[in-house]
Amino acid sequence: MKRIFWIIALLSIGAACGGNGRGTEDGDTAAVLAAAVEQLITVDHTFGVGPPPFSRYLLLEATDPTAGSGDESDAVSRNLTDSERTAVESVASRFGPVQWIDDAEDHRTEDLLPVVEGAVIIGVGEPIFDRDGALVPVSLWCGGLCGTWLTYRVELGDGAWTVTGIEGPIAVS
Image (cartoon, rainbow, N blue to C red; front, side, top):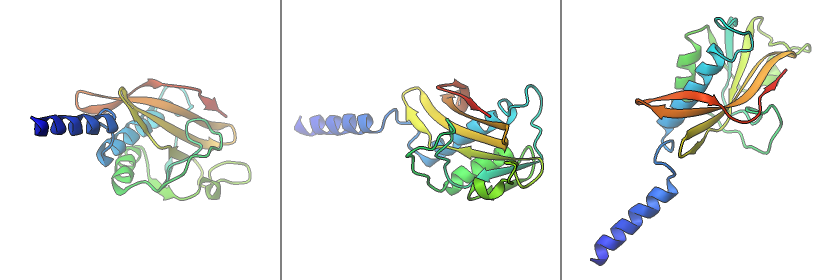
């Protein structure tokens, strides 16, 4: 009887520490990042209704501490994993050529435009998983008066992660 008690206790502690049991795997993180980038490129690209107007996608190879709000934060940046990069690139490459970059500042002109004409710089922040799914901060920069920062709510339904809305503030330039 004691053994069964301890097994149940350990399973309960493991479940409590692991949140909702989703999102702790690299595949879930990759999938929520890809869903967020797809929404950003296809819907919230700042040019209204229609296809994305960009000719090239410059993707930050590390998490963007300014994603979500545009403000500098204490968030620590980390390099995206291979599976995260693959997932994000597979989405962005459907819309144009992709280039991975390490620093957005190195890819902006003095006039704050991307150094590659017609390009957009896209960043993702660290996703935060909770019982409802995940919050994924994102950033899109296409010029001094062309950018957006917001956080998507991404939920798992029918076996796929899907953006279901925006939570928190939206910053636009």
